[in-house]
Image (cartoon, rainbow, N blue to C red; front, top):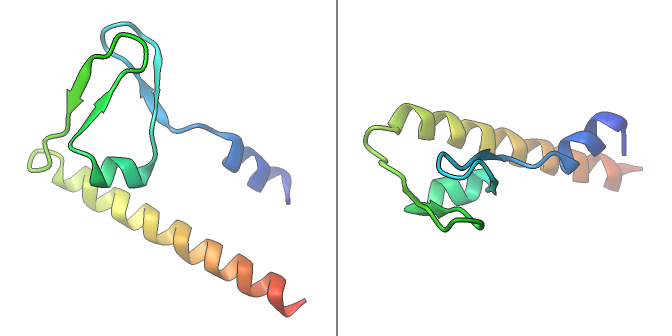
Length: 81
């Protein structure tokens, strides 16, 4: 695994809670499928408005597809060796 791949896999995605400032870890899959996120510290529930966030969701779907394509290519390249 290259340093770039290692850093990408170790990097956590998410956001800071607007109420307490703690990190809310999430994934693209969770953002695309859940209706809300909950802060693990203060339990603030953040609803996801899919209509207002449509451009962001479209971009997330493209990123998720690109990640899947990269994973498939990486598996294929390893199998060829």
